[in-house]
Length: 157
Image (cartoon, rainbow, N blue to C red; front, side):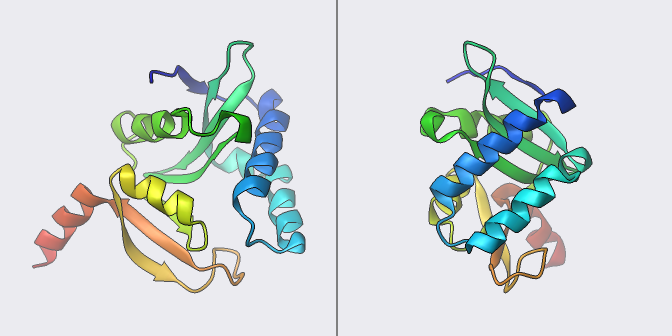
């Protein structure tokens, strides 16, 4: 499916935060309530200013899904629960790979659906950490595009 992808403006941050919250509640059942609040506050307190945001909008110009990019890495990708399984996430990742030249993504180890999704998109696990970037007990799987990972392995050998 071909979706139009565009950048996100600051006046759309409330939509982004709402989609993030709905998506996380639908997919991150492993989060403790206090951690959900903690990450939500990060979203509201400037985190979005530190990444490039791209979105797919529906027929009435509301955001259906979005991703945040930093350097060569997808920092976040969330789709409104009512829009899941419609190719929005795949379109965003395809755009990130082909147009933005991303090569990496981190996934919560407990989020099995996200892991399968990124594997289908061509990523492989290259490393595991016991804690997330905030030091919380949520193991992270660091993933790289398989082609990039293979190239690095050949250079090492």
